[in-house]
Image (cartoon, rainbow, N blue to C red):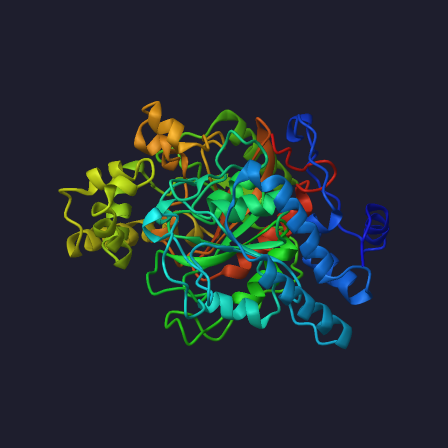
Length: 508
């Protein structure tokens, strides 16, 4: 059944009351260009869609058709998809339609989920964003997260772009070209879950998978104005490397909860997955009386005035909501980045160095420079030991300066600026230095991949400058994932939401 805008608006008006935001939408928060019109289904929430499906006011097939139409019209602008699987997805949507008719709908029945190009699904290729793997054989086994999505009834219509070997804050590859954020096509969608973040902002899917080994969920969340959750390692069945985990991306916090409740918990495919599973409530108490710390990460990168102003406005709203907010210094420093990166490469992830070195002529911009930097640098147990010593020092400092003093949440910027160019081919031609050209100079996320037992929800700050959104990291005490969700739930009611009231991407 087709759903027009008038019917959809009436449906929303009949929905339960939602708390009004306490943070005003300044003129600078609104895109200067006009948003591209969309079928309302494309940006509807999980709850809205499931209610419509159950009432027969729309169907999973309607949703998929609307989003495919939008992909066909607008993906040439953002280029966030590697492979389309529309025929398979349509079969899944029709099966979901039948389940709604029979009253057998599952938690994500008929909801579209964009799959990052690092999630194996039977019959699909995983390329790592590289020409070296573009013709790799189809997978013969699902990743654990895909098993869970299939069991929940999700419809997966396409795979999303990533930087080569998942290493950069954006995606410019010889395999698939350059991915752009729909908010401003000049700028990066973040990375490595670049296409997942862009696809959500573009209205191409309702949910999207991400993964994070240096900020790869949080950076795209920030650059695309969506919510992203970097769970405590093991909370989502992923792999055995502690610095890396799968996690969910969503336009709305409530959608993030639905998504996380599907993918959380143990799996026979991941020994590190924590049991018993943690249930994430839909509703949370307010933040009155909470003590919240803020670290600007000044020794990692200097945030722009626009970024700092956006966070300061949010901090004032938190204070008005009854929170005590103080500045702290956790002791992070940019000089420790090599210890982090060498520690990462001392794990099994470092096998990419040998693979890439053997095929330099096929690599994407800046990859050869990374290999040159690694060349001559020993990567092994001594580097792993140095990373472990850094983790121990940082953990002690954070306990002494933040959580040991009674703070419930630590806030940090996600990016020092959102204005990171999308096209790394052009940046390389202009001789922009490696760390600046690939965006890593501006990321304040990587310390928390060493500190991977601290859960983080990246929450949107709104539109900050040049039509670009930004986000901030809400970090909880070790294993206190529900504290980060309680914060994000309240934030979603205090902050004017994107993807509403004219705050949509312009694709320009």
